[in-house]
Image (cartoon, rainbow, N blue to C red):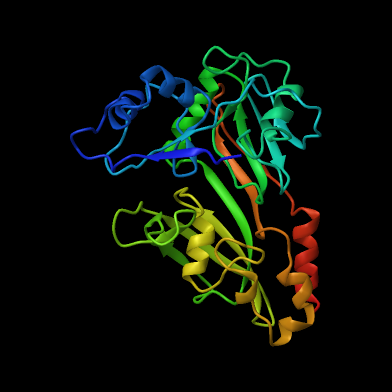
Length: 323
């Protein structure tokens, strides 16, 4: 099955600043109707970095770049599936879930079912819907192989309010990463623009031109014989693969990351060789979205949530501590 077709806009210049997102995308892509673009926006298929632009009236900002994901035609809407969910919080406006590694957020070619959306359609019986359709409002995504917290809207008003917070980078997000090596300095800020890699379109990279401003505050919490480290990362911005790219820029690739570091490049000597097979074959990038904070769309109060390390992540730490 073919991949989703990804359309990437030019960088917004001052002439387009303040224009509606649906009109801007229609101007950029003449082969896609404005009504189709509006439907794709409603379905959560327009993003700026990893944040979903879920409101057709969203005003575009100078310097931004948008991705329009056009899925291959499917026969039906996603079906509800009785998949267990780790619900951290839920009310009539939104739901916060602790996504396991290995679960895709949204149905797509190659992953048409068994997704978080399928599970939410079964679980949430009080959806008033997004864009007139009873479906969960995806506000942001984390990679299939990243575990941790996600907030999902149950109605249009909550969807719009949450999307605006993500677009303004006012959401508080803390991740924990297990990396090879030790960051130098142990604590600091990586302020480096991120854009599409000119050498591999599947990858993001630190770039000098045509990138987006990206800032990661990091702190090294534990060091394992100078071969690996546990690092806490707070995102000031939310760019695609931001932590994976910024940590790689420090020379500290994430354990298990098959995109940014191939298995043959992983440490094969030194003290870590004792645990080499276990660590080198860790089945996913060792990244966990541990905390999430935002303003509630109804009460307008700031609320925050925390997720403990999942079993595989905690076991990896224990293995590294024992070297």
